[in-house]
Length: 222
Image (cartoon, rainbow, N blue to C red; front, top):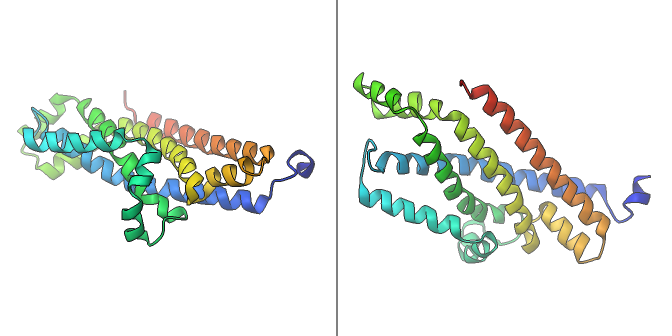
């Protein structure tokens, strides 16, 4: 039955491509989470009225974030080819896509982190500072816990963007479902392969969104 509906589909290729997409999304997602929170905290703390308000530092980080989140991803991949080749040793395969995925997604998530931190009740922050809370305590006991629903919601959106980015990276040799849809589907005119690869991408996106919504609702105390 499956062979009659999808005559050109090979399940081993489908599972391998799905695994590569999940691999790229998971690793780049973890790196994006760490780097995005660090950049978002830096933006929040150095902004006007922040704990370490500094116009020049905030401006420099803000420009850096704006530049990299504004470059179309397909162009970013090309721009980072020399860096990727030095770092990874090749421009092909799932690992080669990771630098571009991280550089493309981290600045985007950093802005979401900054927005989430700005939503934290200033009264809670001032009360913690008045009680002598150190910077580390303020960050890890107040800012991050209080903004956790927004942070989870933000990383959910970012992970979905990473799935899309990984599909684009697949077109130029990074592997994954994008590569399967393009090489085995589009170039060989196997529409059934393209359709199944697209459906698998949608399934991954729906699962990420569902998990993100559940975790966000559990963390939201309002």
